[in-house]
Image (tube, rainbow, N blue to C red; front, side, top):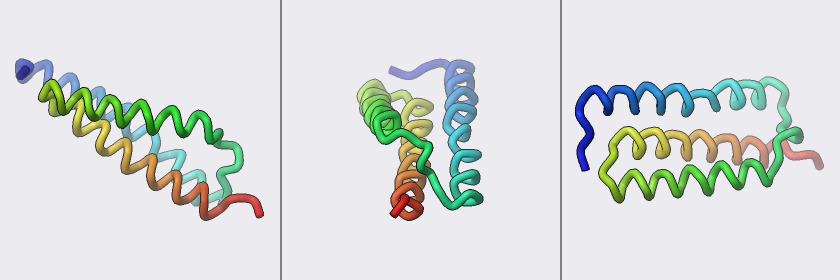
Length: 89
C-alpha cells in the first residue's frame, strides 16, 4: 500500500519529531552519568511497541513507519547501553 506523497511527508515529519524526542534523554543520561530514574518496564514496552510498529510498517509497505521505528529502535538501544553502563553498583 503506497500513500500519496503528501501523506508520506506528513508521516516522515511526525516520525522525525517523535523519534528524535529520545535524543535529549540520551544527552541527559550522558551528562548525569546515570539512568536510574528510567523504568525498565517502560523501556521494555517502548522497545516492544517500536518493534511491532516496525513489523507493521514493513508489512504494509509504509516507509515513514519503517524509518521512524528503525531509528527509534537504534536510539532505544543507545539508551539501553547507557543505562546498563551507568547502572548503580
